Image 1 (tube, rainbow, N blue to C red):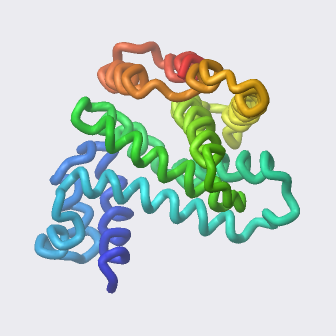
Image 2: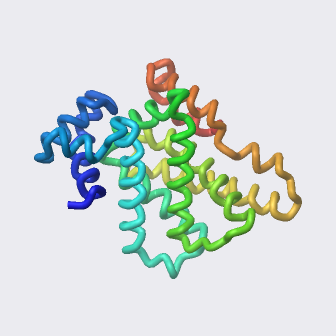
Length: 231
């Protein structure tokens, strides 16, 4: 068993415990035990403890997303269709673990973890563009990822409380946001209006503040759907 397989094994077994114990050492210990591993194996898999596990959850989600996209006829799709499919697939992977994802966001919203949260978000959108066949290396490389980060971060809040069948409302929300940022992308590339671009990027401080409010119950039950429009 490789170290990645060991981490995957413990992570998947620990996810049900995260719902009750949060991202904690206890959840990881119970997961390791359920997967048939001892504490030495847990330490080998996640020497950094909870933070390592939270980061690996993001990596595991990205890999699952890419595996599913590999089975799709992406070559027959337009770029926007590929990106929309990638974002939907990302949430499909997370659907069985929605509460674990919610708690992951709460953990990443802590002031000391905001930088890690933004780094993980960048990895996710980079993986999506990679799957879509993007090979840009100029400033467009970063512009595309910044704009998609805005879509993914806002869509995550919407998806967390979406009770529609097959997440149809989230899919519609994703399509609307993609239409918005693609229009902005064209405007910034032709006119050079940097302010337009910046206004569509996720604000890390507001993202963290709202997620902390959400995790402590300060918002109404459907608050994430409304706050998603403002990220």
